[in-house]
Length: 229
Image (cartoon, rainbow, N blue to C red; front, side, top):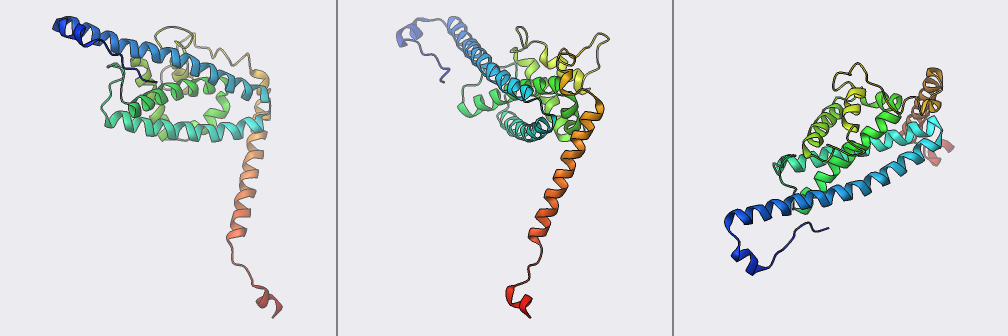
């Protein structure tokens, strides 16, 4: 969607320099306001996807899906960060107009928020992957810092997700009254530590078997003529 707004040439000629600056500011602010509405639509899609994952109610499948999802999410976040840094885009500056930069901006905001949703609802699974990956830690720290400065999360239903995520991940110190609002609501997905550890062991066994099969397929093969000898 094009966020640029045009105005009649005659009106532009009649405006003073100060008035033109005011209109320019309004144009930029309008671009951000339009994006905020698009962001709300995207968040609804994300919530629907998350609801489907929760309703799956199978820790083994959730484990596999989240594994794949996080790898893709952090790859997008890494690529988008590179674009924004290369273009020297300040998070609290004017809303970007270039399509490539707008895409990178939206990818950072939306993927950071979605990762917060996932870690708050599936903390054990996410910690299993996240805590051993220093690159992901660095990326999400940067993402949270970027998002906090955009003004998109200042109010509304998503205002707490960044702070709660940072505390859950240990990025920021937990406040005395910190509580994961979803931990109790969805405790049935992890009825006990034993259930979760069992699922992890099963997944590790599956991976090892798959690796062995790959090694066997890569090994030397005996030709039919050699076997006949």
